[in-house]
Length: 505
Image (cartoon, rainbow, N blue to C red; front, side, top):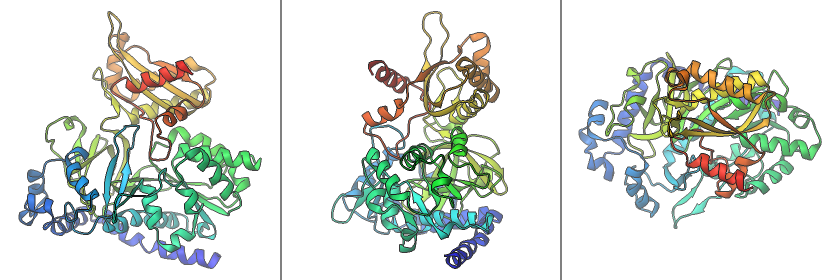
């Protein structure tokens, strides 16, 4: 196995030279992909509608095609779901990634072409391993298996030629044979719908394996880890899997979970690698082991644009090209892809932490923020505040959500939080104060509104009972890796719904 590990590590590291090329020549790589995408789609229905043959520059493209969202592309996607082809992309689309992202009742079906599978998602998966092998040349990852927390849906058949499932299910069903060999548990367990049974089955199936890496959303990874320790009677995961060396995560901010993972995996040598992989595409990989920034991957068949946060509400907001962005400003990502998404706003917001090379951090969602009073609190602000409050009170957070408290009579407005702790703070009131103070430090608009409680009062925080969010997601039939609790909302429906559930329990 050591020989095989050496061969795989050598193969993975060969890709590093190409990654260094797009880091060095980002505009050339993006320009080349722009022309490839436009040329590829010029004879599709969409390409003819907007006369792609006459588009010569990204500027012409921006002037001609309005920014899209799922609702504007939905009529085209529905026809593709019924088996029509050559609508948004020339090659046959047989797979769709079913995505909700939040607890929204509406599902999205994102087309996944063969090109986007191979040139984007699988390439991202291989690059993730290439970067790890390059940063840890003495790794032994391929001497064991990778535990992958798969999706929450079986692949379903729409018609004779079309299939859908959440992204991880689609990827697992299309994995090359070598990748399937290195993955555990087997597909029948990985793609189970019932997450309660699935966690038990996964734990039972993997405790005897030589697991060297784990991939999954932090919340569900912790649930699985606790099941494994419960089954084995061990104190930590290294007693179960002594060769565990890598944890790959994404989808949610890792900062609130870091201390829990240090307890579950008590090793200074454990490597944590963040990825930015969504149904719409694979966008970023943490390429440095001493930094949490992610390298924006520029050669995955995706052409990028960025809408400044202050322009998001505009009817057709101006979008910037890569060469025009600035450091530490919030942008909504707009993508054009080899899966047939054209000027598609995916709903995430990012900041650039470096412009040479282009590195990013995720700051939130275009719809997940609180701005009821002009305070513009984004998820990044909330995560910083909660992390600081946890550090100062010894707390560990499992889940949370927050929304506005509107003005009433003479009372100021405010924010109402529901927080479920894995480990209670040693001083709850101090936790609230530190959170509030940190929000004031990282967000000047929030600080201004908090001045003498004139517009915003001190946050109202509910200490939620154990399993609150799990039970809420379960009641909504939203258990699973693709479904996440909305962290911040500019309305009260989530807060009120959860509070009502707590009250009636």
